[in-house]
Image (cartoon, rainbow, N blue to C red; front, side, top):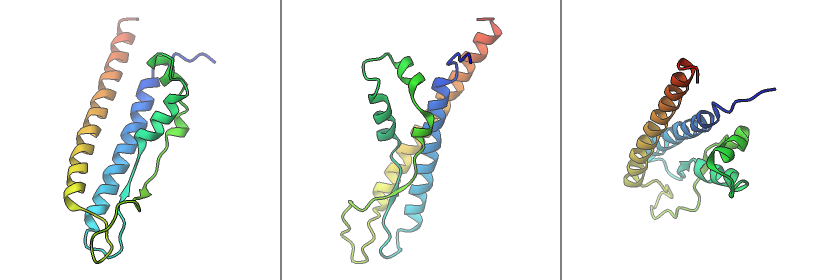
Length: 132
């Protein structure tokens, strides 16, 4: 089977955007549970998973790294942040200021990923339109 690799970057960007969206949901859930006793914050760590996958090809050029990433290994889920010490009497470990900061950071990251995917598809469309 012939594979051109034309969508390799877009596929990885799509996985990153999915993870960012999942992280947005986790942060929103943390904020919603700010007053829930014993609630422990949730988070998503896509960056470490991607870094681990790319490490297998550390001496290869970026396009080779991306081409060889197993997309099914980039599926992430939420985890409970038990390491974050709770200073509150109710044992809840959500800090609303930290969550608001993480939410803003994640929104910027998500928008950047969507813009990157849009640019990637635009380049592909241009290449196809020019017969290239």
